[in-house]
Image 1 (cartoon, rainbow, N blue to C red):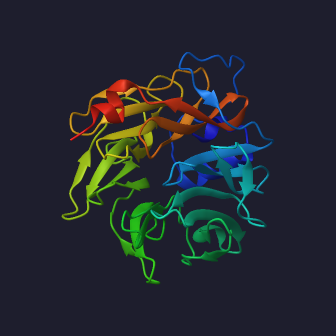
Image 2: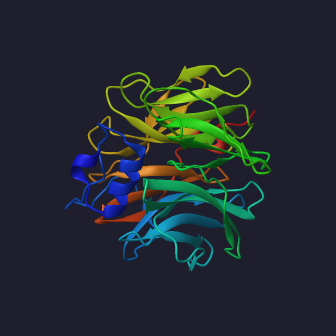
Image 3: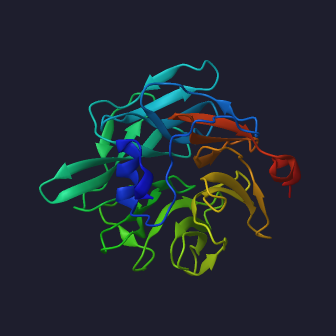
Length: 311
């Protein structure tokens, strides 16, 4: 993915993740699209990796440029934006606590030992934050457990990106996966029984499931392209993820039980990092459709909507 970077932020994200062979977001001239997505932000700099608050009223994302990225909150009721963190470098990958009172995020710094990244936790709406992980390594992309007591995240502490687990009341992390490649972007299922993530265990990046109870791994997607960054529907029956299987990064939907797929976005640009709304009706994502990377919103098709996913 490193061949076509056009902003320093994207270069740093994917140099941290080391996703060799992945297509990267690239500027495009034709910004037309046939999927009726709605643009939510149009700021200077880049808005990356949106995440819904549990009450569905806010989107959090990293915003800025030239290494000066911080967490910003966007009110979906008023469209007003509020910067939550200040004076940090390359802040990204936010994750809301289930009660909506805290945000976990990643900040990266250059040190004498090289590039390092750590997890921090900020209060909402106050913005007071404290460091959560301290290992001299690369920690990334946290996901809060449904009970609110733990975080799962990828880390390079073992020499490769694997999944790690740490309780909020503990200073020690436990390794969940052991792969000499890349396990990344974990997302806890709503019932707490599984963790979805992307991995290159099969030779290309695909979506995988980790069973929390027995550690069993299941490959969900299998395509000639690369699939990344899964996010669960609120009912735990479906996933949204981005894929370069058609040449550009586009969003796709998967029914977990049947593995049936449906393409969600159709754009000559790159769409990535989809986040499912708490009510199940919409998905927020980042895209460079308007040259810079902004936050966009799209409706979930009926086949994957909550009206068709009732027990």
